[in-house]
Image 1 (cartoon, rainbow, N blue to C red):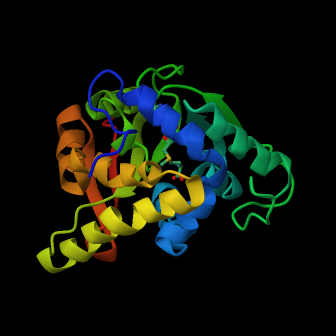
Image 2: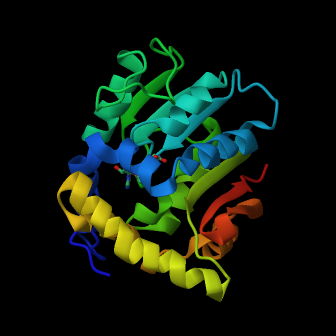
Length: 258
Ligand SMILES: C[S@@+](CC[C@H](N)C(=O)[O-])C[C@H]1O[C@@H](n2cnc3c(N)ncnc32)[C@H](O)[C@@H]1O
């Protein structure tokens, strides 16, 4: 599956930015449709794993990288953490800003089920490239990425940059598409990505390539197992992953050594 938004090599980041600038206003709606709302549950689970079940996030300093329209950053903020949402696509950050500022509406003007009324004071948005973060070493208690690692032009460099800004002993988590082990499940899963997503892209964004991109970007993405190995080779410890829907989604996690 090809997509004009997926280009290996030096134009990779530029094309990713073009893609998310084009779909920013429809991004949240499409996520709900594509996952039948399940992405909200997986994102909540990431926050739980990051902060500890039942543990308040107050005083934790969280960086949500590739924050997009802000789902995960806002969930951390609601749990009481001090959150910085960082992304390199201005249009996505504008939607994130609007979700806070408008007190609970989406870019479409409908009620935002993820948002609380009123502007949360403990979240800020920064335009930044994940491969060159504008933060000092050892700045954050948690770094999270939702559906972002797969989009980086250089995943290993991104993982090393995350390790740099994490405080020693603290945790990184990444939620993204996975590659299921079960051969019986792989066919319908990849069939869904190949056939249904470009249709949704055409209907809602006017271009099949916007959502054909997901399968194209998965091709070179090492998924849960490969990311675990890469994290270990970058120097993370206690690495592992939790899978959902037979491995079609996964949260990878690991800790910066003390
Ligand atoms: C699929 S969206 C994920 C949004 C959000 N985290 C979520 O889970 O819904 C991926 C985001 O990663 C951002 N992104 C991709 N590469 C990036 C990079 N090198 N630096 C910063 N942001 C990047 C894109 O702009 C986009 O907003």
